[in-house]
Length: 376
Ligand SMILES: *[C@@H]1O[C@H](CO)[C@@H](O)[C@H](O)[C@H]1NC(C)=O
Ligand SMILES: *[C@@H]1O[C@H](CO)[C@@H](O)[C@H](O)[C@H]1NC(C)=O
Ligand SMILES: *[C@@H]1O[C@H](CO)[C@@H](O)[C@H](O)[C@H]1NC(C)=O
Ligand SMILES: *[C@@H]1O[C@H](CO)[C@@H](O)[C@H](O)[C@H]1NC(C)=O
Image (cartoon, rainbow, N blue to C red; front, side, top):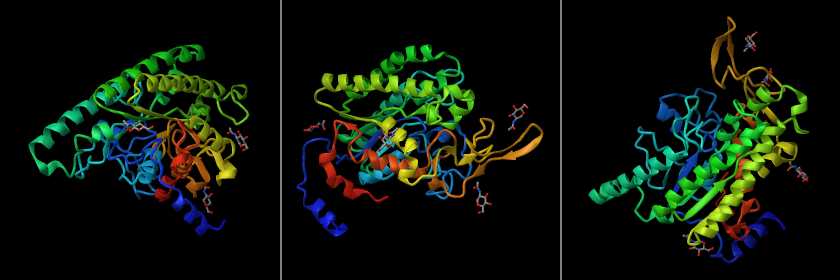
């Protein structure tokens, strides 16, 4: 079938109205750096240096990436604008089509003194409550806010997205044994369930939950926990971290299934990010990448190009000499951006895999016309 015939074929599939409905008027997102569009840097008054943002935004955009995140590609596919960060006050941010509460470094469990982000899941949910009540107040007061704020019914018809848990697991490995990390998972998920329940009680009905990725394949974790080769699996990833991620994901999936049964008037979609990312790292060349593990932006050169003392974009005096990170010439050859986060090219691949519907439960392959919105 040539391309035109394929397009015609797709256009002729009658629009199916069962399954997941993608006509969301707004998206409310919760999470960590995997989907932070500027919240942490605005909230703690920090900044990200170039080359962050170089690929798409032509400068730092508050995202820990060279360009767009998975959530940006998903918004684009849903024909919605990129989400503004809740804590971004400048630039007349519009929240009409949703709001992003995700902040880099955030955990599900409440923050500790070592936390990068004070905006744990419970705080993000509280911020949402405050956002919602403020929106309703302002909308009642004057029509002129309508351009920037969601309508009341968007809170029940909008999509609530979640990608959080990675920092609970990865952070725990610094002070806990594997068994202790695994033992903490039910507490993390109990806190997650509490937040979801609060959102449900406030009228949220459409939930979209990402599971966590193969943490053991991140240069940050390999550099710290994988110096002994016996700790690594066949891909060069830290086995313990990936096992913990797997155990977290199994329990998360059980929880999402349970909540779907419990809240029968709501729709829960579970997305298996772990499988998509692992497949990308294992079969990188098939997807057009050249480096599955090494950071594009970092310090130290291959195999990891990662040094925990020197984050992407920084120049520092370390051990008496000035050191600066290097950045790869072609970010599309790299899966990993800065040792912790994925490149825009990888995020684009992951988003396109999500949109096949094959990694979601329930699957939404019957929504193929939706793919016509792809504008990568
Ligand atoms: C949930 O999905 C069903 C179809 O599976 C749909 O009829 C219903 O409207 C959806 N519920 C919400 C709250 O969107
Ligand atoms: C890599 O690709 C092969 C062949 O398609 C597949 O069997 C395997 O599961 C993939 N690896 C991962 C980790 O997904
Ligand atoms: C600085 O020196 C310490 C001790 O020798 C070493 O462990 C560390 O890796 C050095 N840092 C860099 C960036 O080379
Ligand atoms: C980038 O390309 C230049 C010129 O081809 C080369 O000298 C340099 O080593 C490359 N840098 C990296 C990080 O690959």
